[in-house]
Image: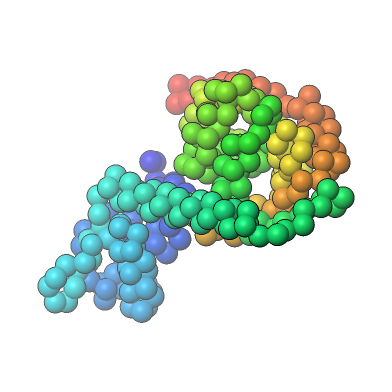
Length: 277
């Protein structure tokens, strides 16, 4: 890390708010402090600091003392991040379990499926979107094509990379179009190593979408996430309308021809950002 802003930016990818990131960094840099001293140092109210401390304690990133007045200390960075990841993974597993229970219950109901009209559903959180992708990859046979922002490489690295690897290992293909910068190199390279085919389309600001086997698709209405948290709100339309999927695939193939291989973009970024350049 070269400065505080970069450190704070990386912390946000683990589900911390701006206030939580700033307070945690302050404790790391300056050591244990009481609520009143933290409020004075951070130029804010004690009540605000107290709420943030409670949240950080719940995330396993801060420990309170048993003395009076209470002093709060930052948990070692690696331990804190491991704790944060495990909590998010637990929440995701719980959602998957409830989804499986719901599917079992639905089998006992007398639902009337219709082949005449396509189904549409609004995905409202990152947690719900991740669960949908994991479920879709489990049933996809041939190909998953995706156009999405570079920040989703970080999301995928945390939650869906293993599902994608399993899909690729059984013969599936994943093609992704994105617009990534130097700060996303590690995540992008991880996907290339797994077997993704990634291309760079610099300056792309069009619709975000994905298509599974030209049958099911997701289209982003709002996917501007500010932090990597399972509760982060998104607005994504999921549908089994194969005509819509076909239109998206047609759009994807046109964009694919305009994009360049990710390896070439990585080489150019390294030349620009390298200290020896």
